[in-house]
Amino acid sequence: MVKPEVNRDSCLGCSGCFTICPANAIEFDGKATIIKERCISCHTCVNYCPVGAIVVEGE
Image (cartoon, rainbow, N blue to C red; front, side, top):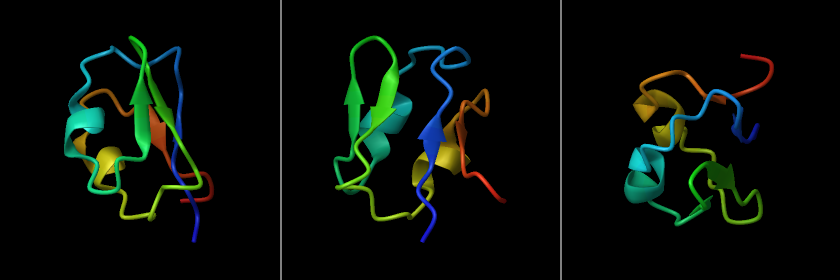
């Protein structure tokens, strides 16, 4: 399964993805970072991000 990645330059820092991630796979330090070992590839964060800062390469 392909894991999403955050384009930190595009991330607005809204923390919405951090809040909705069912696997608690996102750390937030003002910008989002996905912890790949915890990510279950549900892509909830990808669908949530209001600016498209979270992407899945190859899709």
